[in-house]
Amino acid sequence: MRRLLSHRHAPALLFAAALTLPFVARAIEFSFLTRVGGVVGLMMLLSLGLNMTLGYVGLFDLGFIAFYAVGAYGTAILMRAHVPAPLAAALAVAAALAMRALLGVTILRLRGDYLAVVTMGFGEIARLTLNNLDAWTNGPKGLQVRPWRPLAFLGAIPGLEFVRKESNVQFYFLIAAAVYLAAEASRRLENSRVGRAWVAIREDETAAQLSGIPVARYKLLAFTLSAAFAGLAGSLFALWDQFVTPESFVFWESTLLVAIVVLGGMGSISGVLLGALLLGGIPLLMEATLSPRLIDYRYLFFGLILVLMTLFRPQGLLPSARREAELSS
Amino acid sequence: MLAQQIVNGLSLGAIYALIALGYTLVYGILAMINFAHSEVLMMGSFAALGAAALAPSMFGTGVLALAGLFAASMLAAGALNATIERLAYRPLRRHSRLTPLISAIGVSIILQNAVFLWVSDQSLAFPQPLSGDAFTLPGGAQISALQALTLAAALALMVLLHLFVEKTRMGRAMRACADDLEAAGLMGVDADVVIAVTFFVGGALGGAAGVLYSMSYGSTKYNLGFLPGAKAFTAAVLGGIGNVRGAVLGGFLLGFLEVLSAGYIPNGAQWRDVIAFSVLILVLLARPSGLLGERVAEKV
Image (cartoon, rainbow over all chains, first blue to last red; front, side, top):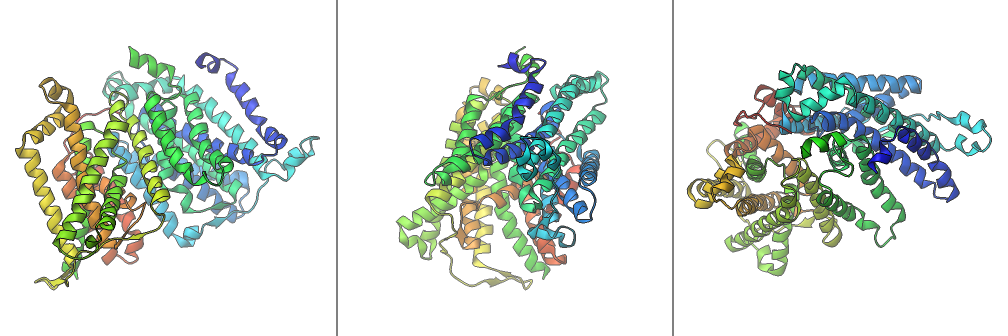
């Protein structure tokens, strides 16, 4: 499995395969599948972001969802001010990066679980602020976003006419492309001087410092960059759903992301993607396919799956080869 | 006015402190955040409710009914916490520190949904065994019977915990394990037993808090544990996680903070959690290991 995944062309082939999903969904008349694919894609983007801090550098973050919220609300507010969608998205990502950098400068000297609880606190502060600042965010009632159809032009191509009307399909393609680019960016970073420095910090911060790695600066870099993925995911989410409320950014979402990264395999891109596919996709698919008698049980099943997966694959589904080599030596 | 706020802050803080102790005891030994602790206290409150359903006299008032509720909740929550440790955390003890955290999240989802599906998705009325009016204290503040009970019960449990940890053989073994799990094992301490006892004690304290919390709301619900659990965890970190005195200090501080910001700041009720978390962040920036935590080098 790992040899197959580490093949040079594997990412491009997987991406190409992923692009066929809307056609498959259409062929089997299960268009909900495309929506599931889009939601899973957003999970993948978020998890790749968290993987950069938690997976590579070992910075335990329990409030990552706050930057998803910044991306979503930033886009929504700008869209309501009649800013063109691509510009709104870019500005929202920039806002997420700036806030993350500011937070990082302040709190990154905290270690381990103290960092976790401070990020959790920040996540809650962000959500409650969105909830309470009625003048900007319309409070718990949420904000409507005007529609944007990014890929309507694809409808001009023979055979793709159906894409013109279906925002789910258009956003699915957009999200898939974003995931591909994010995974590619992660891979390149991981194999660069920066990525090696990150892993060195994760394994032993003191030793890394003594080897001449500017630990504080590299931590801040990973911490900040990860927000680009979260901000982009949030922005796509707001444009796609055309509606944002504070409800979408609760603490539970942050813990789910930690579960995806840890269960997928910390620091392993393919593992994190697989984790997001399973943990993000299973609840939605259960919602769509379980019989009415069983549908109420879906979260119970989800909890069981989480416990069993942890007990049977404590090292993660697809642990990173580098990490495994370190642990066994 | 201020005297009243102090009374309210003390009784809310006492509940947080009891829950925070459960987090900190476990953390002290395993360096693990027991994410399922909120659900343990919720289950404790449901166990008390179940006992009351079996013995309807517990819905009445009186010392006996009160004792019954506490006994049922504390025993059930303690046993549940120890069982969770055995099934979901112990097999993972040799793996990354974050792994048991994930199974804890799974356990917490299972427990919430089990209650949601098989007991009730609604708030259920909780027994109110206390009768009697509020006392008026010298400063003019009123203290309700429930607040008095909360303070007394929390204080008694804290003293008992202190005696247990400092004066008994098992307590000494717990301190040894918290100091160095491996070395304690080499000295002949049965770490598995000590850990099971620690989870039981922590769970029982959570169960007591569950009863007090449900009584203060007059009802219990499948998601009752989440909010006080998350706050008490914050309190434990504020005080310095792993430190028993720190958990108590953090619990009371958080209780005060909440009550005072709701009482004195315009729109404070809406912003009190924001204020509490902001203070937490500021305290940790000034004291990166919490108020009473020791400065130790650690790795994730």
